[in-house]
Image (cartoon, rainbow, N blue to C red; front, side):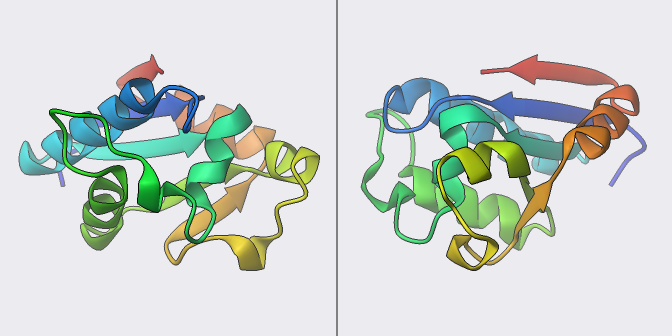
Length: 121
Protein backbone atom coordinates (compact mmCIF):
# COMPACT_ATOMS: atom_id res chain seq x y z
CA UNK A 1 0.00 0.00 0.00
CA UNK A 2 1.00 3.58 -0.45
CA UNK A 3 1.95 5.97 2.30
CA UNK A 4 -1.48 7.63 1.96
CA UNK A 5 -4.09 6.66 4.55
CA UNK A 6 -7.81 7.41 4.75
CA UNK A 7 -9.70 6.69 7.97
CA UNK A 8 -13.44 6.08 7.87
CA UNK A 9 -15.33 6.42 11.16
CA UNK A 10 -18.64 4.56 10.98
CA UNK A 11 -21.49 5.32 13.40
CA UNK A 12 -24.42 3.57 11.69
CA UNK A 13 -25.57 -0.03 11.41
CA UNK A 14 -29.03 -1.38 10.52
CA UNK A 15 -30.53 1.99 11.52
CA UNK A 16 -29.16 3.43 8.23
CA UNK A 17 -27.92 0.74 5.82
CA UNK A 18 -26.82 3.33 3.26
CA UNK A 19 -24.56 5.21 5.69
CA UNK A 20 -23.27 1.90 7.09
CA UNK A 21 -22.36 0.71 3.57
CA UNK A 22 -20.75 3.80 2.02
CA UNK A 23 -17.54 3.64 4.12
CA UNK A 24 -16.96 0.04 3.03
CA UNK A 25 -17.51 0.94 -0.63
CA UNK A 26 -14.95 3.72 -0.26
CA UNK A 27 -12.48 1.64 1.76
CA UNK A 28 -12.52 -1.18 -0.78
CA UNK A 29 -12.07 1.41 -3.54
CA UNK A 30 -9.10 2.84 -1.62
CA UNK A 31 -7.51 -0.63 -1.62
CA UNK A 32 -7.88 -0.74 -5.41
CA UNK A 33 -6.24 2.71 -5.57
CA UNK A 34 -3.27 1.52 -3.46
CA UNK A 35 -4.34 3.76 -0.56
CA UNK A 36 -4.40 2.35 2.98
CA UNK A 37 -7.94 2.39 4.40
CA UNK A 38 -8.73 2.21 8.11
CA UNK A 39 -12.28 1.62 9.33
CA UNK A 40 -13.21 2.44 12.93
CA UNK A 41 -16.64 1.43 14.22
CA UNK A 42 -18.14 3.64 16.94
CA UNK A 43 -21.55 3.92 18.58
CA UNK A 44 -24.17 1.57 17.17
CA UNK A 45 -21.80 0.66 14.31
CA UNK A 46 -19.84 -1.64 16.64
CA UNK A 47 -22.66 -4.12 16.10
CA UNK A 48 -21.48 -4.53 12.49
CA UNK A 49 -18.47 -6.43 13.85
CA UNK A 50 -20.64 -8.97 15.69
CA UNK A 51 -20.83 -12.46 14.21
CA UNK A 52 -24.00 -12.77 12.11
CA UNK A 53 -25.21 -9.19 12.60
CA UNK A 54 -24.35 -7.64 9.21
CA UNK A 55 -25.55 -10.65 7.20
CA UNK A 56 -29.01 -9.12 6.67
CA UNK A 57 -27.91 -5.55 5.84
CA UNK A 58 -28.04 -4.67 2.15
CA UNK A 59 -28.65 -1.24 0.68
CA UNK A 60 -29.94 -1.48 -2.89
CA UNK A 61 -27.29 -0.43 -5.39
CA UNK A 62 -24.40 -1.72 -3.26
CA UNK A 63 -23.07 -5.20 -2.65
CA UNK A 64 -24.36 -6.83 0.53
CA UNK A 65 -22.64 -5.22 3.51
CA UNK A 66 -21.14 -8.46 4.82
CA UNK A 67 -19.54 -9.11 1.42
CA UNK A 68 -17.92 -5.66 1.55
CA UNK A 69 -16.74 -6.22 5.13
CA UNK A 70 -15.19 -9.55 4.12
CA UNK A 71 -13.45 -7.97 1.11
CA UNK A 72 -12.04 -5.23 3.34
CA UNK A 73 -10.67 -7.75 5.84
CA UNK A 74 -9.43 -10.18 3.17
CA UNK A 75 -7.37 -7.31 1.70
CA UNK A 76 -5.36 -7.39 4.94
CA UNK A 77 -7.17 -4.66 6.86
CA UNK A 78 -8.42 -4.78 10.44
CA UNK A 79 -11.93 -3.73 11.39
CA UNK A 80 -11.33 -1.53 14.45
CA UNK A 81 -14.05 -1.49 17.09
CA UNK A 82 -14.54 1.02 19.93
CA UNK A 83 -14.12 -0.84 23.23
CA UNK A 84 -16.29 1.52 25.35
CA UNK A 85 -19.04 1.29 22.70
CA UNK A 86 -18.79 -2.51 22.84
CA UNK A 87 -18.98 -2.47 26.64
CA UNK A 88 -22.13 -0.33 26.59
CA UNK A 89 -23.78 -2.95 24.36
CA UNK A 90 -22.36 -5.89 26.34
CA UNK A 91 -20.42 -7.11 23.29
CA UNK A 92 -17.44 -9.30 24.14
CA UNK A 93 -14.29 -9.71 22.04
CA UNK A 94 -15.27 -13.33 21.37
CA UNK A 95 -18.52 -12.04 19.78
CA UNK A 96 -16.55 -10.26 17.03
CA UNK A 97 -15.94 -11.56 13.52
CA UNK A 98 -12.47 -12.64 12.51
CA UNK A 99 -10.44 -9.60 11.50
CA UNK A 100 -12.10 -7.27 14.02
CA UNK A 101 -10.03 -5.71 16.79
CA UNK A 102 -11.21 -3.82 19.88
CA UNK A 103 -9.42 -0.50 20.44
CA UNK A 104 -9.61 2.39 22.90
CA UNK A 105 -9.58 6.15 22.56
CA UNK A 106 -5.80 6.59 22.52
CA UNK A 107 -5.51 4.28 19.50
CA UNK A 108 -8.34 6.11 17.71
CA UNK A 109 -6.57 9.44 18.24
CA UNK A 110 -3.24 7.99 17.09
CA UNK A 111 -4.85 6.69 13.87
CA UNK A 112 -6.68 9.95 13.18
CA UNK A 113 -3.52 12.02 13.73
CA UNK A 114 -1.61 9.79 11.31
CA UNK A 115 -4.25 9.88 8.56
CA UNK A 116 -4.19 12.00 5.42
CA UNK A 117 -8.00 12.25 5.55
CA UNK A 118 -10.76 11.29 7.99
CA UNK A 119 -14.38 10.80 6.94
CA UNK A 120 -17.25 10.16 9.33
CA UNK A 121 -20.46 8.35 8.44
